[in-house]
Amino acid sequence: LVIQLVFMTYSNIFLQDRLKKLKSEHGKVQLGNISVDMVLGGMRGMTGMLWETSLLDPEEGIRFRGLSIPECQKVLPAAIKDGEPLPEGLLWLLLTGKVPTKEQVDALSKELLSRSKVPDHVYAAIDALPSSAHPMTQFTTGVMALQVSHFSSRLVLIAPLILASCSDHEGGNVSAHTGHLVIFIFLSCHLSLMIIQLQVGSALSDPYLSFAAALNGLAGPLHGLANQEVLLWIKSVIEETGSDISTDQLKEYVWKTLKSGKVVPGYGHGVLRQTDPRYTCQREFALKHLPEDPLFKLVSKLYEVVPPILTELGKVKNPWPNVDAHSGVLLNHFGLSEARYYTVLFGVSRGIGIGSQLIWDRALGLPLERPKSVTMEWLENYCKNK
Ligand code: FAM
Image: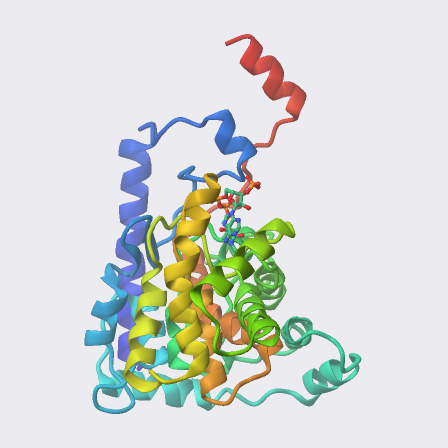
């Protein structure tokens, strides 16, 4: 493992040179125009950040270090023959840009496991919360409590494989961007110290503070909480109409949801304009392992019913399902029926991606982010004078 880390260090030096060259030779090249729509629309579509570990294409979906989800499934080592990729393999890929061997993945698992003891005060902090506290609040509290220790986390590795695909989704999503803004290195264990030492910045919040901030962004219903919301919503459909629901009844329920001012959870996306490949990958898994599951059948029926309705609304840019439309049904099938816990797994999974990128942030010495904001009056005056 040490030899491999030296390799990573070597790659850092190479990438630092690439970054310097890019800056000095092409620093003034324009990447696009910013419109008032973009400023008012949550900076959608503005290219404004470097994110080495993954790239999201609106049509094709996510690529991790250049590999699509099906490609990752083919090349990353699995625990069993023809099984799903191990999260440690994905972590290796994101960190180094190289596909690991099974031996490398096993060595990384062992290394992380050896650092996995959670200090008692962390449990005490979580236990001090009322039992009604949402699992995401408990998770964030645990991460914050870890800030006073030097814990290196195995947490990122308990994410179920099916959720490994949620590990990274480019840099602009709420959780990744929040973590990035406060600049942290989640895996600031001894494992990554060598890399960190290459480039020490200033005014940096540490990994725990930053990851907790990212988790708070993930806990919103438009982002990571959607997987919880989807399962609760699906169950409410069954409660109201029974499990043998007809297509017409389902259409009616979707319209009722929309008319009550709510969104259909698990559908739409800030960037994607097609069915999320993470959804497709989970659907294929379900077709193989749980084709008769009644909730899966309902999810399949929703796939037929929801997109035409969202299209009919006329304003939804992407009527297709995202990853959250499916993940809860798989977890529920394998016995994890506590929907409130689902976003925690998403958070654990995302730790792999955010942590990997933030190690690179440090290695490349990326600067503190500080986008410019303007007032509405400023925009109105600017547009008038144009
Ligand atoms: N149901 C109803 N309306 C929707 C919708 C949906 N699933 N998706 C988008 N819209 C509406 C949206 O609310 C907006 O309406 P207003 O103009 O009245 O405000 C309009 O369509 C245009 O929105 P958009 O440009 O298509 O999407 P945004 O980029 O603004 O928002 C999402 C993206 C993901 C927040 C939005 O699609 C949504 O609310 N989806 C349901 C919640 C969800 O599944 N979130 C999880 C996303 C997931 F990928 C993740 O982050 N884990």
